[in-house]
Image (tube, rainbow, N blue to C red; front, side):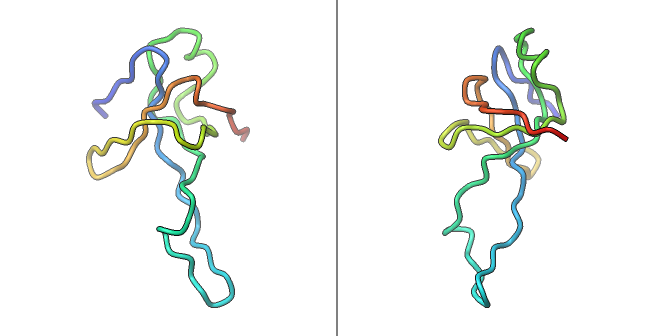
Length: 90
């Protein structure tokens, strides 16, 4: 991975949700809401942020946050610390 977020930013990979099925109808991806949970791939250079969030943590983030990027056929988000709502325990 060549991406290193700066300052109070975090690089995350969205957690894929399972396919929704209502009866015998499959709900298409275009009708679903984007997942708001993600796994942390890299943490920025802010020391306080590094104490709170570690690589591998699962987080919950704001609905309209982040900048989408694509690298090595994978999609990532770079989000700011203020957009992180919570960490999800193991």
